[in-house]
Image 1 (cartoon, helix red, strand yellow):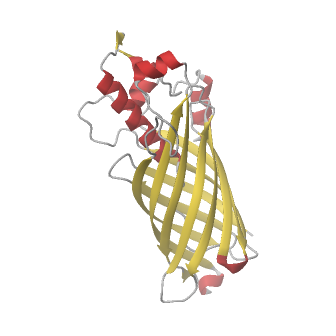
Image 2: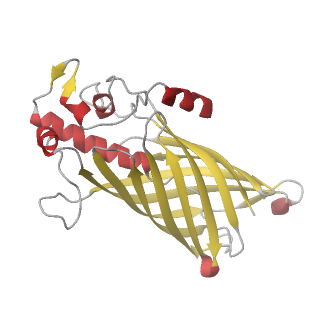
Image 3: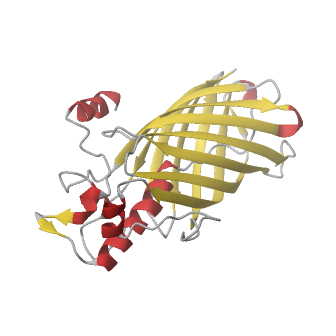
Length: 275
């Protein structure tokens, strides 16, 4: 995956998203204000969903736990039914033909704290672009290790989108994860664990154009930000997700998926170590 995405990047960042790309399609200038505004709104909502945190097991790492992980998300940008086959992703890239998925390799870390708290963060790159993401979050296990009752964890987080010269975007997320752990192997949980989990979260996506004023007015790119003059409220996106993690010793493999009926789905696969 890394070889493919690095080779794509060397081809000249073909997947860079720009406001200026929205103003022309198939060599024809786009003058439909309603189309431009709806395309900008869709792009903000879908990009925000793409960079938002992925589901993880409901159990925290514990007061002495520390996790390092590498993963990659595959966001299916063509998976949404649209009146037109042209997606906002196609309109926003230079060659007007975005790949059917967006790969986002990430590195993440999380650390357990007293009182069933946990802090974490991640850094990621939107493959084929000059942009990336940075994310921080806090979690609190309100129910943990009370079997047969499932573990329940609350999460608050913030993700920032960086490296784009024409617009800024960020995501505030709040959610709840429910899951459990089952010992596997000859010695039960001492040998390995299987952890299924499900998550519901609400994303609040903020965005602001930073391109020249003439271009912003041409696109009709409104600002989505709370408590800002002449801005609309941030976009709210409810989302559900589920997955599982298999752990052997200190190593784990994790697979999950996320979906929102308002935007686009994603699949996340990764592995890591917990010490």
